Image (cartoon, rainbow, N blue to C red):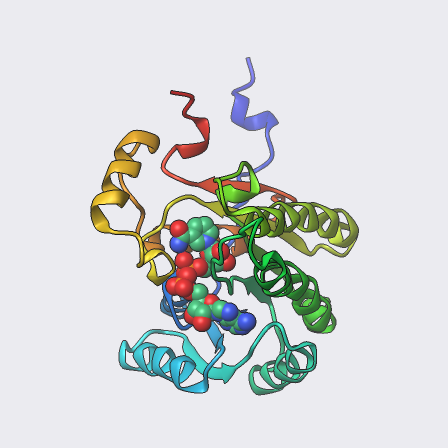
Length: 267
Ligand code: NAD
């Protein structure tokens, strides 16, 4: 009888290293973007830390330099609602690092949508920063992603892309849109070997949710989240890293909850 291993191909190891790759992260001065920038640099990548203010981006790039990682960071001011700035900064990043392998669309904020108030004041910036900017960043980075060996795009959506919390409809619409855009781009760019995935974080303890009192967070987490807590942003960054590995070569169009079980709990 033939041993099974004689009839099977040899095991083919795939790379789990992003060392030497260039990544651009939006909204990287805080929360999940900052954690992602640190993690990628610690894995040997060269990271473009981009955020609204140059000082804030500089501070994270300086932290990364101080941490003596294998990779590196450089800082840019980039307001992703500014389409000319997206084109300019993406070009500068590609020139500074010699290309772009990885794009993480992460920048965001939360403005409630009040049906009886100035709804457009929430709708317009929310859609601009958390949906329109994603496609603009992708289009700006595409010339370099097309030249990359393992091109990867990750969009940070939300569990608000899978359901809806009351009072949050502009954000909910944008995040549902991110999942749709991710799927559309994955279908369109798949033939070029570019993978596009999105992550749907649940409750994550970042400055975005700093205004929620701790006791409210605890009550919510114990009632709604099987893991009974908020996550730290590093836990999301690790999923982002998993999506951008060369080995993540057959994962595309996915919307991956990182939510402590929030979205699978019925009661
Ligand atoms: P955060 O506030 O810590 O970080 C967001 C960053 O985005 C900030 O540094 C901010 O300056 C930047 N930003 C805002 N507007 C920008 C713009 N126009 N251009 C460039 N940068 C801009 O928040 P976070 O929780 O780390 O959020 C990161 C992403 O995760 C957001 O897209 C958010 O919607 C999403 N998210 C957060 C949670 C959560 O519970 N914290 C849950 C699900 C999804």
